Length: 93
Image (cartoon, helix red, strand yellow):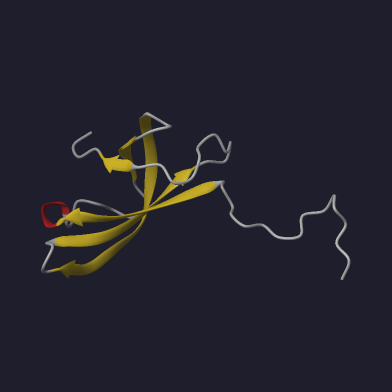
């Protein structure tokens, strides 16, 4: 088919929600609740605190690392955040 250059042919990424997947320490197991918001510190170029909602918490603990997998979503509906920046969980905030 011929593609009109003014139309979107393919969307590579939807930047309205950013996904964060982390392996958190076993000491935090049972403290993260799906649907709840948590505080994260974002690295360069964002350099600020951001909130993310817990989407998935694995019930499997990795015995060698003593961690479990958690997935969070950052609302980026204004598309003000880029993809690919580093992020750290802010325990206790």
